[in-house]
Length: 312
Length: 233
Image 1 (cartoon, rainbow over the protein chains, first blue to last red):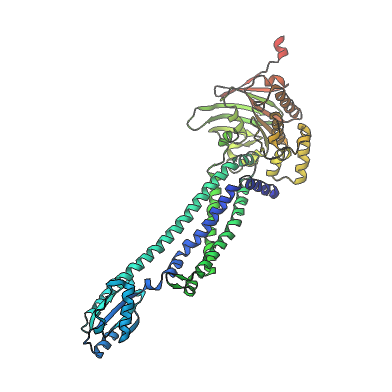
Image 2 (image 1 turned 60 degrees about the horizontal axis):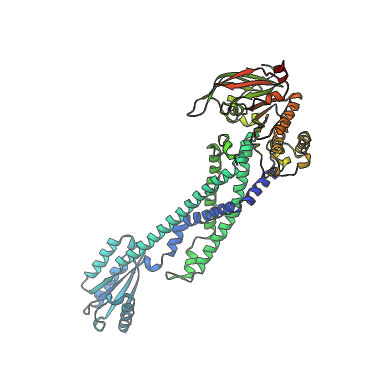
């Protein structure tokens, strides 16, 4: 059958011009859904790269006994180095200790003390990797075993604090995932309601097509074109917003202490974001077309409703 | 059965949760008939028009329209049947933001007629209903009588085999009602089959050569019209 494209496009245009606010709101909802979708899909990567290094490491400080011999210290250090979690070791001795203790006391407050600096000959700062935080109990047991060594005077363990910090960042990650996912769903529901509103507005027209013998495809055609025009506006707009979002994150100089360069590297690439966006778009298109089909099958527009729709 | 446009046998219909509208209804309409369906409000006139036009299904029985069993057309092919009928409503059911000619052209547009054919047919219909001077006027600016003429134009533009009119004069004064009936009568004289549903018992008296069916107590009975002059004798 010959499709009168000109007439259908004219009707869609008239529909948009008559109620521009409904159309604009629908485009906005679709845009936000197309932004929230990729962010929800990429939230794991985005939030992982936003977790600062200090929240992924634990610092343990071991101070030596005054009487600890060089041989004992060497033994303990070898023991630490052999541990798989050990990322780096920094030995501090002599006058450097006094400066470090002074600096650390400022950072950690009055709770931090390595005893009387005049009798502390030195200490080791051990940085434990994220693997340690995955098994905090084993990690703490390792730290405790260090404290039990006769050459060690005291141990400051930052494991518990690091686990706490990491849990907080994990909570933020899941919150971001949940929020963006929920936002996506809310936008889809809004879109569904706007479609319903749009169907009620079109009811007279669709009813007439029905009465005049239009094919099922023709009856749906204006809705399809209307949706396609919304998608044509919303998707590029969402891509632009995603691009700006990534640009913004790349230009943040410090984010929880992360250097700009590392943040830019760790963020999902444009290709990945585009992939997520295409995936979201496919989902939105599927939902929109299912809604249209559902509206016709569920008789949102039916002859039984026609009597009251013409009453105005 | 030959020349029978509408044939109903043992027709039963009731709305969900309601009483029966029709019980064992039988009737037939021949090609070229001008039929009036009379009945009070709520008697089932509109329901019968909807059944014949394929807008409403029925519970049991057989309804053949132009030899086609409507029950078998549901739901996939019913739209093809609707292309062969023209419907006129009491409330016109026009798209008020479209012009007279656009409204008349709608059945041709939705069924895929070519632009040239649409222009030719619409011009012919505009001449017939005498609305050529208002072809570009939006329907919202027309009077009730003119709107009904446009609705009639829309009902005949695709040369239907049957015209159904549901209370076509319900919103019009007597002068306009007579004009509409005169137009219907002219179509009928050219061989067009018409079924007009109305509660106004005067209407059949204004036209010659009509058949009358009365819907009463969930059944249809044929009545013989008595003209004024016959009554006077």
